[in-house]
Image 1 (cartoon, rainbow, N blue to C red):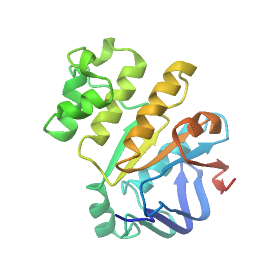
Image 2 (image 1 turned 135 degrees about the horizontal axis):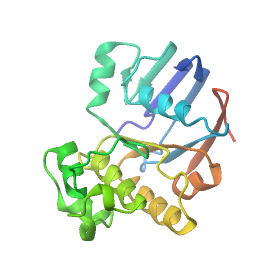
Image 3 (image 1 turned 90 degrees about the vertical axis):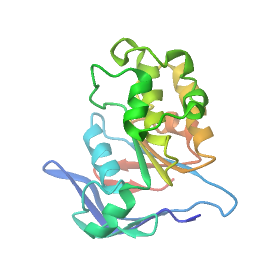
Image 4 (image 1 turned 180 degrees about the horizontal axis):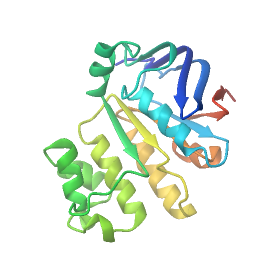
Length: 215
């Protein structure tokens, strides 16, 4: 198991005409005894795009604009490193574009090509398995996206705004599910409220105008 899944040195990540991350140097470290869940609270209101850009670069979907970045031991400044890490990372997004014909089970099958009853049951989705996504409650759709991202047991599970804008009861229940997944994989979740992220995450950083701040 990699105990330091993310190492950044002077990393910059673009977001539109500005920056999602600027000259960031940080390490996300897990104890040898197990996994850890991390949260990154985007403190600037309405800056969800910055969180998405950060998740994209950690997932190997885009190259950092500058600096050095290693995720799961791979160098993400190289195309080879980004290709390698994409197969080891799961991404669950709150604002994923829905597929109108998909049902909840279909989304997980599409992501993993083989639905496992275990992940559906683990995320309390069995009762919703044949419900069309367009008619399912928002929190159920979020759980389905989380299942789709986690079904292949990635080494790193990234969440983009999944805990934002939920009622307290739904936030707490989804946070419990995220903590449960964090027993098997390293989790990095972005969101707007540090207090909400703390429900699911062992450590929470904040970010303002592209600058990461440690507690």
